[in-house]
Image (cartoon, rainbow, N blue to C red; front, top):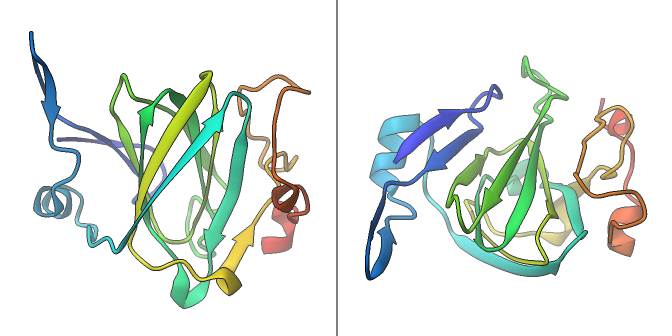
Length: 180
């Protein structure tokens, strides 16, 4: 696996080694020892989640707070998404900064989103199957989130105005300034 730095501390792209031939392909999607050796980060995951979405869906921006904070290792099984991570660690030099990465079944890249980051994605293909590992269990009361269209963050989700599909729950999230 190749580790690609994103400019946000501890938030990295993982590019697997893919072996292809006339029969198809094979790749190791995760190896805890290799991940920890190459990044110095923990690779101990306890929960896997998967979602299916259609074009224009925007999910996020979400995190778990306090003792229930989660690191995530995210990837796309089918289709293409724009994956977004926002650093909300108060003492981080990149607090309030975000990155956007295209993840697809075709490029097979993954994004490691550390604890203390908001996370979300938009679906760029007709449909997408999204898969992620979490290093802590989900806890409803620990949910936090910021509006996907927060003007201060100014994330370009690559979805034209009027074509986005956002849950009612995500439409009532607070602005980024509420975290400061």
